[in-house]
Length: 193
Image (cartoon, rainbow, N blue to C red; front, side, top):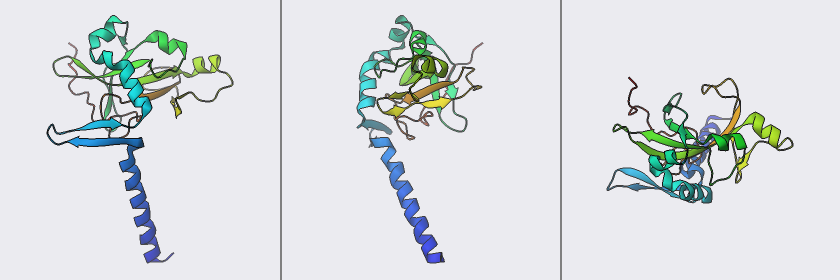
């Protein structure tokens, strides 16, 4: 391949990657110049369904009154971003049922005041439980979105599991279904004494 052809191929690949990055999993993002942050206008019916079903948990007291318990401290990313603090509904984890309206975990970002801000949800299915309940099924999927497999051993100390994050309450530049959100931070979590 001559030099001119190589340059043309590299330019075409770069343009394609830039277009894919802007697509961001089918979500439109508007920048709010008055408030200095991105707002999410999701075209995904799944994100809208999750947001509607979990809106009441923006008040963490409602979640705790319904039996959600803190399962992790604030989980930060291996290189950038974070997930946040996971509040778990253990009975849902044990049931191995995937329904958009019933996530297994609520994800909160800790604030300096000690409060928590709901940023998303996570669907969690233990691999052994999934295989026992659905021996002939492939990997679990939620409304057409395959869950990610996390093997054992892992940093969470859990047996092998499948998971899917949905950032229904905080824009994620990485996409609404990415594991890590670069706009969520753990550095405001109060230190335990």
